[in-house]
Image 1 (cartoon, rainbow, N blue to C red):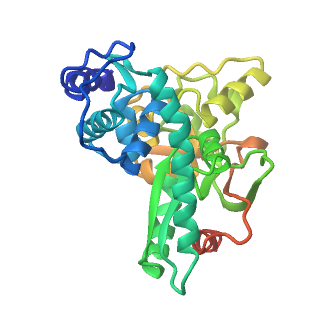
Image 2 (image 1 turned 45 degrees about the vertical axis):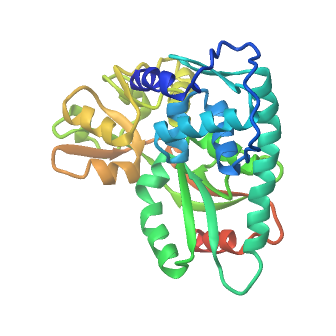
Length: 327
């Protein structure tokens, strides 16, 4: 995997010079210079510990992996002890690292809460809104609405993260996301939810496929053909497995890929047919080389919802985004 190769290259570069980091305590030369603990580096450390990989954390935090590695090294120097055990397969926490992770989460949460409180003061709407959204909403609905929102509120930045539905809801509950957009699901206590958009499932197939002669296609018919899957273990993948099992059949894709555009490319190449949301089909399978047909099942009427942690009132920037997306 590519991230493993990147981890190997980063390994030597991110171990502080002269440290034999094998997870046991190290005695470093004393320093007369009091080093400051950088809150941003602390946040990056928390992200790395949660991701289990410098490369994955760098992708999530939108920072170069080499720069993140240097910040981790600086943080270890500041504490005067190793926080991570680095290996080509990722990272593990030392005892000191586990302590820093626990305290670091609380410190980062407190800082984020302080920022949001300050942003509610004054007359203008400003600040940063953390938006977590699933893949179909990012592809099909958010770009135009975010453009309208950012034109109306130029002093508000939107930090957008693409995640699976379960992770979107979890991020809202954990207060890592101010607003979430994901498939309709049971709403946990503490969250508010609003309808966002309808995004029913469609069957995507090459033009001329036998099923293209029908106005709509049943799921049982779909299972009789070679299939392309998307995001193994994701919300849509789990739905396909559950619905196939209810019919006494198996959902067994010949190929599984990580994005809707890759799904459509596989379909275009003749490797199989696929079930994807209408928004993704419109974005990636709109040419004459494809045939699109509605999935003729009651559960195919897929709904997207907005989610947010219950607060009264919401920070102004968050409320402004919610109002824009709900409109």
